[in-house]
Length: 112
Length: 114
Image (cartoon, rainbow over all chains, first blue to last red; front, top):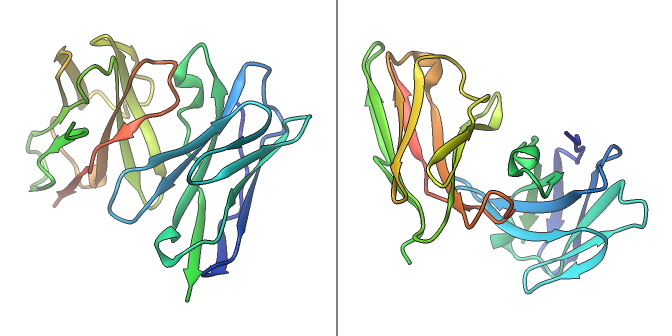
């Protein structure tokens, strides 16, 4: 099971771009990278998933270098409502149980 | 769709009592997951089902915990007897399949055992 390492916390200001990097040095060939967001008193919410290069959706972008040993979640022009905990998960496609380990996450605080 | 539904939202009970948490997954989803979240241990997977069958229960902490999924639209997590260290928020999540990474979480049940 690939272990992930991400910063415990980050601060930003409204309107800035925020990049949260996750390290996963022992990622396996079949592993995908998935990010979740959790607001206080709510369950986590899926944000984005990728395997390599770049993935973009209406919420965020995910950058994955060629060696796949890290990934960066990019949130463009954050607002106060983006204050949340962001989790990086890595796991294989053949068994969902491989990727269901939520680490400590990164607590993002967006300030006015 | 109403999303994943959990009940009750809050439960306060005394040590030694039986606690039953309930979950209704999103219609059409074939996989269901139970998690527990505490400040100390973060978010932990307890058990997950695929097509109503328990696939991995290695996260269930003790024999006091049991989970069932009698049909595709209902699951329970039972703690008997409950202990103060079981106090946590319990989340249920569902996904289209066990290989789908997009899980939909319910609002959680906040359990307090005194």
